[in-house]
Image (tube, rainbow, N blue to C red; front, side, top):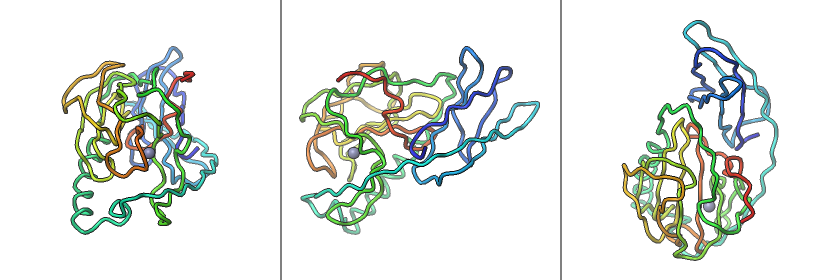
Length: 246
Ligand code: ZN
């Protein structure tokens, strides 16, 4: 589904390299052979797509079918209008920051292991608003590209899997922000923090502190915004999170 994950068995033998459109796709080794794990962009139309699967000996196409998923509309009220209609300087700042975040999102290390998340970055009520079509003060904006977890300012945020810090910053829309690279193109983003406790280049283990929940940037209140990217494609974090009863 758009915003979901395609898990495609590819058999045994040499490790294949896999692309979907112009994006590399994670390939992991399992007990029954190689498996491709591809994020499906939110704006993908339903229908048939092909994975290009290459080894040194051969190239083949593997067909996948994209289904339909209806996402809700969400209307939010932002007190500070500059977060809805930024001025010229704020827009320029946003473009610079977006370039930094895009570069971090494109991080790729061939690790052969695709982490899932055994723990949530913070305990708390998880929204299911991933993919919602959003209106801020009545104006349409990009769909919601992550999961919001309600938690008071000061709640510790923990790494849900081992990784490496690839970006930190005080950004216009996302406030105090941390990004982690978990390998095989799996990258996570933590936004609106009140404090950042890591630096670019740090290695983190599951459970390590990243910072504290806050309300910086474009928010309606204190919460953690958590995004999960596969090969730069935002997917619903719920797909990668073990079902815990928090
Ligand atoms: Zn959010």
